[in-house]
Image (cartoon, rainbow, N blue to C red; front, top):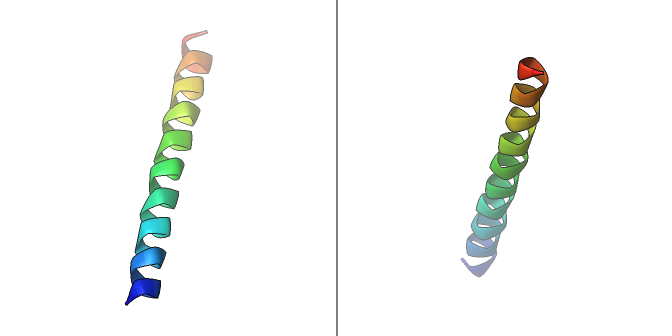
Length: 35
């Protein structure tokens, strides 16, 4: 139970980080397209 909870927290933390990097990546792509 605790292990599952920790895994889920880490998993969602990882997802949040991924979406953050993806946002940064999309912003860079948009700037490159506009340039």
